Image 1 (cartoon, rainbow, N blue to C red):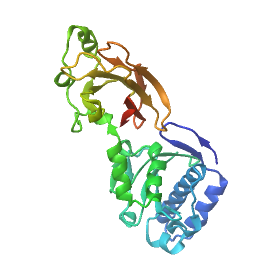
Image 2 (image 1 turned 45 degrees about the vertical axis):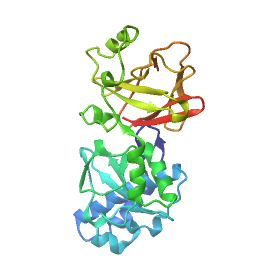
Image 3 (image 1 turned 120 degrees about the vertical axis):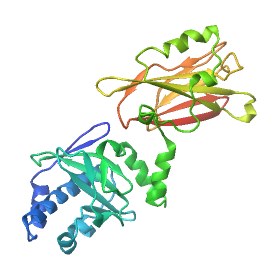
Length: 319
């Protein structure tokens, strides 16, 4: 087996070892349909095991329900045991399927569910995402990105329940794709309500109103009461492309009533791992600051940090 890196998915080759294991358990079944179910389930488990091995996450396949012949006969199970954490369900997804199907048999006693899309030849599998909680049908487009999975497991390792760990993921990132559907979290407002447009800023705001602009929202960032009236406005502008790429423009303005940004205010874009991807520094009489426009695709994650006099406020985003 070998992997092919991807931004939001993980490709796995399925060789003779994986197919031999699937054959071993499928031939124990009494019906063709049950044998096919077990065969596909075992292939999905093998793909996830390899993915977890690449992350150096301990697994115990022999102690998993999916390797228990009795449970395989009477239940639809496809799990792998992560010692100390629990059972992770690995659900196969057929090539043309648009949903992750989770059978009632495994709606409980699972720390999460990973979707494994199998190629028609059954020689390749693509791990497309995960969900911490069960539902009978989950659109593949609504799954969490694999980029979040190590963080999710780390939360579990720290003693959080899977629902608590899921809540941590939910509240740490603003989901920008929701903006494109008209769903905006509390705290985000139109830029016009937060920024007093003066002649020096008018050109910037007009630039944000070009026909290709889809959505733009802004939020007040409080840099600390110890800094007096140093509140600024963080604005994000999203535009979409035919290939589903989303272009993003990040800007910071002084709040209404203040003509200029604080001197030495730093605006940074960070990767999901915390690496600085770009930054800019306000100096003198700047009435706005902005980062270079960048683009991303669904489930990509990034953070925007605003720093002044040692105080940093960070906002996390996911596309």
